[in-house]
Length: 288
Ligand code: ATR
Image 1 (cartoon, protein in one colour):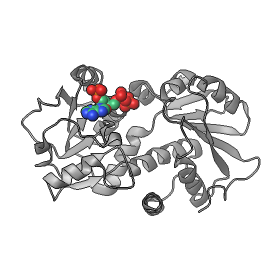
Image 2: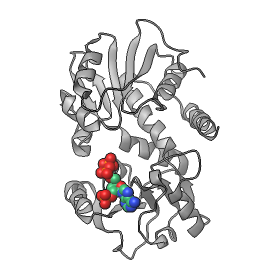
Image 3: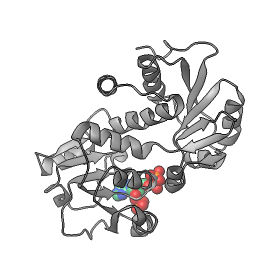
Image 4: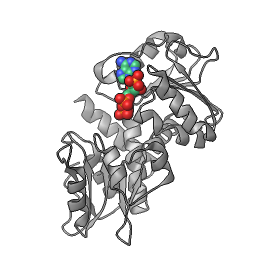
């Protein structure tokens, strides 16, 4: 699948903004979505200097054929500031990963990361209703997923973080959406959890959060939001402790957030089997 196969002159244009961005999978993912849903659009890469997002995004959106963009690190807060209007979920997440040009020219900011996680968890493991969830980490990644998880039927979330103040802050902000509690990594409640999600950046450096491995004993799913070409440090740790636990990395979440952006822009989505085929293709690319 060549990523430029679908590019047509004069068609609607999109891009992902980030720095660095050269290794982003987003052009490949969106070009695949466009192809299977027969949308005439192109999707490129934009890599502004870290302090030049506003200038670069203004120039990009000034082009009539530009209809939207994705935004990744380090620009999710800049995109939040740049948007003319924000969805409620973007306001809650305090970050924007999707910009949508409205018919009147206004730029709407939204975030689709939480939907992406829920999409992937549901696709792989089925209905989330009534399940309890331990969320490790309280940074930007955690912030974006709490409300979508409650909306998907998760019954109880406990947030645990190295810096307890950040976990407590999330409880203050998100308790209105469901049963939410917080503690430091070494002060977990006694009850177990069905799903354990690692939202920390620890797997990037092959580290583990300083938390007891008993968290995996009664859990059926361990999910690491990070992904790589081999099993992540966190998921390997989970499997070693509990061989019957199902594990997943965040590759499907990446595809899920892209799917939700695509739906917002184009009003259509690929079928589940087309999405699964894409995830398999991305896995194959990663292992090569
Ligand atoms: P972002 O907002 O981009 O997600 P962040 O705010 O730096 O990034 O959050 C990263 C998360 O990973 C935080 O929860 C961080 O814990 P602290 O809030 O205590 O810094 C967590 N994190 C990163 N490395 C970690 C490690 N080795 N062990 C435990 N937690 C870690």
